[in-house]
Image 1 (tube, rainbow, N blue to C red):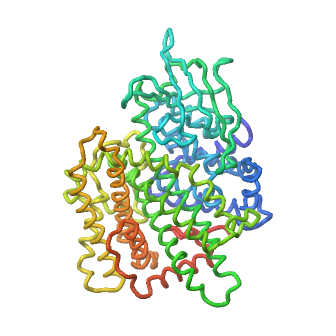
Image 2 (cartoon, rainbow, N blue to C red):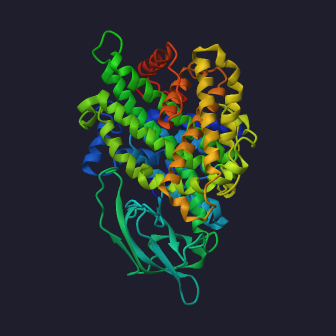
Amino acid sequence: MTGTAQTAAAAASAPGGPPGRWEADARARAARLEALLGDPYEPANPHGLRALFDADGRRTPPPDTEALLDEVGWAAEFVPAAYGGRLTRADLLARALRPVFRRDVALGFGHGITSMFATGAVWAAGDERLRHEVAALLLGGGRATILHHELAHANAILRDEFTARPAPGGGHRLYGRKDVVINASRADAHVVYARTDAARGPRSHSVFLLDPARAAPGTMRHLPRVETSGMRGALFSGLEFEGRAVPGDTLVGGLGDGVALALRTFQVNRSVICGVVTAAADTVLHSAVRAATTGRAGPVARRWHKPLTGVFADLLACDAMATVALRALGLLPGRAHVCAAAVKYVVPDLLREDLEELAAVLGGRGYDLDSPEYGALDKLVRDLPVAGLGHAGTASCQAVIVPQLRTLAETAWFTEEEPPPELFRPGAELPALDFRTLGIAGGGDFMAASLAGSAARLAAGRAAGGQIGALAELAEAFVAELRALRETCRTLPPYGSRGLADPAVCVLSDRYSLLVGAAAVLGVWEGQDGTDPFLADPAWAVLALSRLGARLGVPVPDLPDGCVRQVLDELIRRYRSGLGCDLDATVLAQ
């Protein structure tokens, strides 16, 4: 084991401790990493935006920053505490990852989070031997990568797949080619989703954990590196298998479990992605505020009030959605799959639209990679689609949501009880994430129940007017939309019908997902304990819901007097105080 790997293993040796310490420990780790990465705008900082932009231009990973992440044992964040790592809750995982993603999405994917995508199947269904092997690999500084099965509407990463055929004497032999795999050339483990049954259906694929060093000569070939327009600092190349032996003890779970494992683990991946890329958009928002305030003695020009406050409200809404989905994975693991898909459906669209609004504020400076103060816009616009936030991600979320809508309309909406208040309450102790308990079907709809409950509690304040009145009016508009959606969804064809693929039916997932987003915003606002006066005040929630409502097409009241001013003042305060535009108001390195 190398010195760096030894350091990483030592840093990760202590378990997560009692649940009461999990959040404090995660915050401390994130703050420490934020400090170690340093001021992102300092030109001489080897981990600053200039150095990261330069690595992007060279199409190479940033070596100094990768070495730093190894030294702090960053890979331990992806290993459950029970196996010597630091992973306790999914929301705390996202918090620990944000300092890296705030600076460079490609670095976050290329150096770490891909290992999480790969190893989720092992934590969900692997036997004890496989779990201990994977834990030792990651804690020792190794990497794992995932070789996806092919999905409909696939991008380059999700295109093509492998086939595992039964071998004489037991086990399988692996065949096929995939041209675009992240970290294919430097991964120490391949988690392969391979077709083991030619028939289409839920038992068509299986998962294997393979050591590339054990491939017999001539049975595995590394393909040339692939240049991508986004995430250029990550290493994409291909793999080809020609009869590689796959022993029986490399099977993760049972034969034919691949599709179910993908559905169970993808909900974690989707939620974590939403939680961390929002931090990257936060960096661009800070750049836009800098552009709007630098050189001005007076207030921000009025023409920038709407885009700056609107994007700030959207980022808080995205953080609320991601946080609720991540917390649900531990608190309601058998019921979180639809919520996770809905959040992943909404957040990318909001972030894409937000970047367009910020581009108007930044102008040409936003595309200047020689300027760390402003150039983050260009890089994030390129990185987001490659990070799984493009069309393929949307289609996979529709495939989860649409088949559930008729059942939810008939059995869950307006009949189900609300979720536990701990789902929304900051600082609440929650169970650890256990991949083995994640469900993929049924379980009702706790977010629809929460939306209806929030609206009922706010109804009395509608006559009061002002911000509370606007919030109550918005909540009722979303509930009215849920009632209308229920009537539409009751007429949908049954599960398994080809009619569910009709574009008009798929549009229903847009409406539903925006309702989940509204429920998350209302739940997080209601869950405030007053520690943060700004979040406890309705202004941000009113603005966030107004923007969600406009996207959905529900009646949106005029913004109350002072609402935009209040949100703008908080945005400027956070910018000048070096605080993030997230629910935590994270202290950023200066």
